Length: 99
Image 1 (cartoon, rainbow, N blue to C red):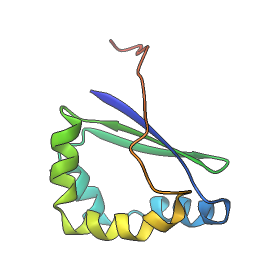
Image 2 (cartoon, helix red, strand yellow; image 1 turned 45 degrees about the vertical axis):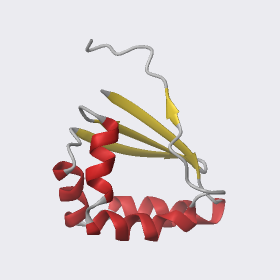
Image 3 (cartoon, rainbow, N blue to C red; image 1 turned 135 degrees about the vertical axis):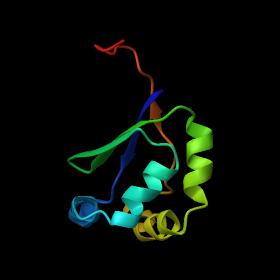
């Protein structure tokens, strides 16, 4: 399954967010793989973050990811950069050229 998560960043934190993703920790990359992510791509436009995430089961993948220490550190670092509280804002997939 494919998911797109959309969240607003604090304008003053966009550069920090982008830099963190450009320099993603190897253990965070491994955490995504270990949690069942088949693909994870992050885009930023203005102060909006778009995260494309592909896995077999989102709830199961996020449950596994939540138990991994590297992800806990990553989330703690990134959480203050979002407007309001971070939420799982999913966009609905309506077209996929490959399906």
